[in-house]
Each structure stands twice: as structure tokens, then as C-alpha cells.
Amino acid sequence: MTTTLKCAFCSGTGKDPFDLLSQFAHCLVCNGTGQVETEEPMKKCVFCSGTGRNPLGARISCIVCGGKGFNHCSCETKCTQCKGTGKSSDGLPCTRCSGKGLS
Ligand SMILES: [Zn+2]
Ligand SMILES: [Zn+2]
Ligand SMILES: [Zn+2]
Image (cartoon, rainbow, N blue to C red; front, side):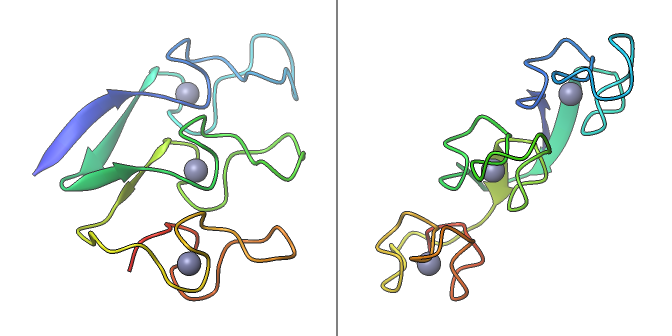
């Protein structure tokens, strides 16, 4: 089952939030529609805190959720390696849970 969500990366505006190409450029995550589809069940992306933005500082979408702010994941248990943060000690996505924080 898929659910339609507001695109986290552009906050539903459909525009590139960082004006990378031009201020009229479409958001690359939702293709300018302002909405994204995610499969159920889903969990808020812990890696970007649901913002859809790469927490490492680059002006790109989150590498874990692809900018949606949510991950398709049916896991309920916190990942023991990253303790649910989704991050490794170097700031990259946890290798065990791929950054979802659950396993
Ligand atoms: Zn978008
Ligand atoms: Zn994310
Ligand atoms: Zn982990």
C-alpha cells in the first residue's frame, strides 16, 4: 500500500529548496509535484530527522530516505549498532541498518 506524503525536501512547494539550478528549478525529489509516495509501513527518517535534507551539510537530499523524510520499514527494534540514531560515529549512515535506525 502506498501513501502520498508532502515532499519533505521542498516542504511541498515543488521547488528546489536550495535554488541549485535556478530559483524556478523543480524539486528533484518530488519532480515538482510537492508530493511523494512511500510504501506502508513507514517510519520517519531518523538520519535527517524527517527533513529530507542531508544532515552532512551538502545541499542535497538525504541519502537514506532520498528526500522523502520517511523510510519504508517494518522494523520495530532499535538498531543496536547506532542505538537508533541511524548514524555511524563518522556521521555516515549506519552500516547495519542503512541509516534507518531500526533493525
Ligand atoms: Zn519536493
Ligand atoms: Zn532522511
Ligand atoms: Zn543502525
